Amino acid sequence: MGLFFRGESFACPNSLVGNTFRSKVKDMARTTFPADSSVVADVRPSVNHSERVGNQRPSMIVLHYTGMPSANAALDLLCSGGSQVSAHYFVFEDGRIVQMVQESRRAWHAGSAFWAGETDINSCSIGIEIANPGHEHGYLDFPKRQIAATTALCRSILTRNTVPPVRVLAHSDIAPARKQDPGERFPWRTLYDSGVGHWVRPARITENSVLVALGDSGEAVTAVQEMLAEYGYGIAISGIYDSATHAVVTAFQRHFRPERADGVCDESTRATLQNLIATRGRVRTIASRGRNAENLPAS
Image 1 (cartoon, helix red, strand yellow):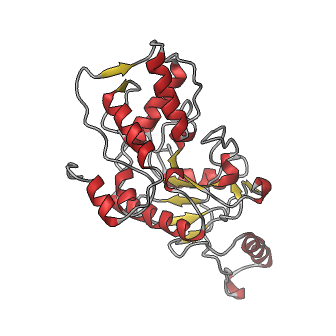
Image 2 (cartoon, rainbow, N blue to C red):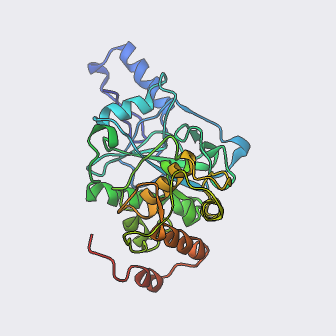
Image 3 (cartoon, helix red, strand yellow):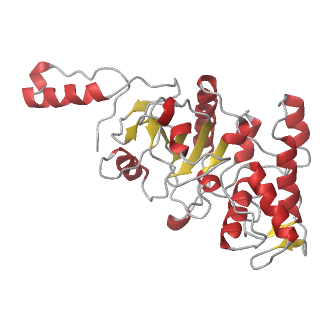
């Protein structure tokens, strides 16, 4: 296990350490940095980062799950030079937050991705890894303490950076063909109720309300693709409901209509998307959030 730092020098009594160990500790201390947020418990620097292209300031938050059975192993990987991956923050199941990369730096978390014309997502975003084994290792509900910590972290980030609600996103939103995290179990509504992200009450699912699905083509497919592209998703306007469109619809459902994430565009999916587009520029108030949550089932 690696050493954790809290942004200050690490000191040991001279009588307890040799010169070699003291030298290594000093070298490690020089690579650490003060945490950007007061909600951070520890700083463990990752070597995987670079300058933000064009000196951009962060304007997006991207949420991931780790997708590994062990949280500690995931953190080790994100800090390892051989992995070539990182994120700015890591949130353990118990709510402990570790910072790995300074917000001013470009962490390597998004990979090949797209949102609303942006292709270098790493240069314009802050990445948060949330410990969860993911779909391949026994996908679990996110503990309440972990979500509370993630929410507090996002709110802290918003005090330092201008991030529009529509740019608080899932990894699957920006890379739908490759990724499915943080997945349909992630409680986006909870974040929204605390002032983080964009969300609307999902339209009710009704049976036999399929509009278009894999293999269909025509104007109805074009209309769905145009709405998804207007919201920000990377999708070709082809009029053909191909596998790429299916992946984007699935990603949309995981974020905004998680009750059924099957990649089929039904009336519920279309209506939810239409409502999101209609409300994305609206100023949020406590009253409007209350109206938006009317008739929601208890969670």
